[in-house]
Amino acid sequence: MIESARYTKSGSIIAVIDGVQMSVPDDMANRHRQMLVEWEAEGNTIEPYVPPPSPLAPLTRRQLRLGLLQAGITTADVEAAIAAIHDPMDRAVAEIEWADATIYERSHPLIDQIGSALGLTPVQIDTMWQGALAL
Amino acid sequence: MTSRAGQLSSLLTTTPLHGFRNLIINGNFDIWQRGTSQSAGGYGSADRWLFYFGTGSGVVSRQAFDLGQSDVPGNPRFFCRHVVSTLSAAGIGTALGQRIEDVRTLAGRTATLTFYARAENEQMIAARAVQDFGTGGSPSAVVETPVASFNVGPNWQKCTATVNIPSIVGKTLGDANDHLRIDISRPAADTVGGYLDIARVSLVEGDATAEADPFSPRHIQQELALCQRYYYKASNAPLSYPFRGANFSGGATGVFVGAPHPVKMRSTPSASFEWEIGDVAQAGSPAVVVLSADGWSISHNIGAGSFLDIIAVTMDAEL
View (tube, rainbow over the protein chains, first blue to last red):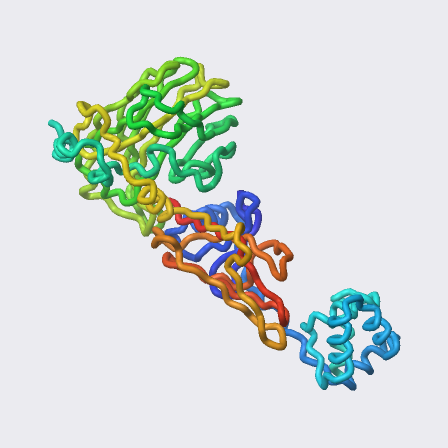
């Protein structure tokens, strides 16, 4: 049974068939593609490809700190979260990243890690990040 | 008339030298890449074989022969057991079948279907050949040709019959997936609750009914490679490092992982992946999957210092 299907950027189709998510080539010699033809004939639709949102641009040190401040998070709060990292090496790395980086990448694992320690979800961090970009 | 291949067979005895004579793949039920049992219709256990339970439910499973048994020739290791548990309408129709690539196969020729069968409850099973002209375009209608019916009981018995596969002159092919199919069907009566066991299936050109065992065995590696043209599962799970891509850059970036298929596949396969990022299992599919009949590759964005592991891949290019 086909549960869902959507096109990908490469033109193949991600489909859930019999409970298994699989990548199906847009090739009529493929039996799963044939199943999708029959599924469409029953009135179902393969969803079009939707590009993912663009990754958030990096923040300068100034933007990051102002953004945190607007969210009610002080420099001291961040440094306390870093100080609470248990592993000494990880803690030292985080201190260097915090103190010496000139730009901050949203995808850096420390952003989610410290954000989580400060009670922020990834979605909240994204919102805050978006706002800080305008500062 | 005994086929020339059959005459050669008697000269060469039963050796892998004439192994490509048998057009059925996995006729000895040695290869079970998907699993050793299934309860849903379709592909699900023995490679290349389609199983059905009609309007009811049931289970197909791999069963082992007793070592040294002599009821079925050639010392096969396994046979296939088809059990129907419930049935809501008369007859289950096709119980098992195999699609042989290319409808030109044996067209206009005489062939011999041979298999061994036994049934818990005596019943009449039937075999037929179906010429399917494919999908897409405007293919000709399928042509069904009865092979024979066999009354089988609780003891293993040889079922063999010749069939004249019709010519395909004047027929029209579809865009893809044309094939010759061999189906074995079960009746409704005495079917529910009882098993039907099938072993050592062969389809060879010519009249081989006089041969003691026209099965024509192949080396297990040849048989596996033939199966992998249509389906394979690859896993490096027991190893410390499966198919791995690592991100050594300073930021998030796409990493690429890929591999060639063990054999060229019949067509571009469907693919599913069991995969992890940084030892954390991921749901769904990697972001970019590129497939061909020759191999697969994926690309997925991961964080700095992380790694992406493909634990297992499943590729399906079945008919």
